[in-house]
Length: 164
Image (cartoon, rainbow, N blue to C red):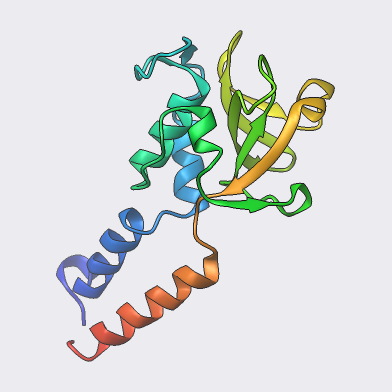
């Protein structure tokens, strides 16, 4: 089944559906990295300067997942993950200016997170730095497990095979 210049209808359907409807950590991380070097402004959700929870909310929204606006509300979303089990795309919560979750970042792998720093804007930081290590509270997973996505993909692809 070949379309124009080697593009198949099945390929277009697959790319369209899975690129937008089922975000994975790769799409999420590319989106997050596109915000690098933007400024920080507490309480702002502007695309040019934002706080940590607005940054996280924007990244997930672009990938089709609606999260609450505040860090405290985001801390209730998704499922808990042990520190030793964190994966790229997981949300990391920290105690900074208050005893409750007051800062959030997105884990990107290799011991690093991307987040909105009050002094540097959107940056990548190591989570094992003393500042972050001592303030870490917990992690939560918002993205679906890969095997759940594979099950959905298999069902859709199987149903499409019969039609073409």
